[in-house]
Amino acid sequence: MAYSEMLIWLYIQRKDFYSALMQARAVDKRTRSGGTRVMDLGGISLKNKDYQGL
Image (tube, rainbow, N blue to C red; front, top):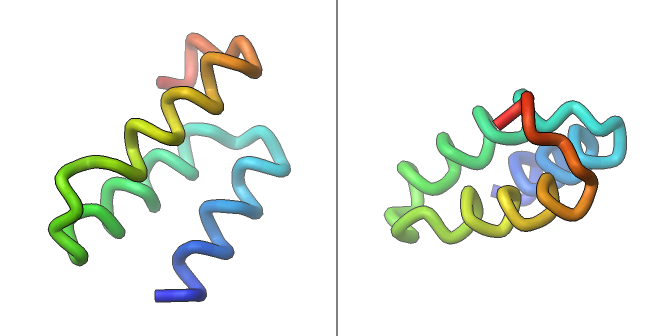
């Protein structure tokens, strides 16, 4: 679990929001968290004005 979270963080740092989205979706499915990581990533992507990636 920690590896997956760090991978999402790394993708965000690289501004690779598409890869971060794929990883966040996988984590949400595994943990059944109802899409909270995807929504958080959406907010981060919006702040970075990355509209094409998501």
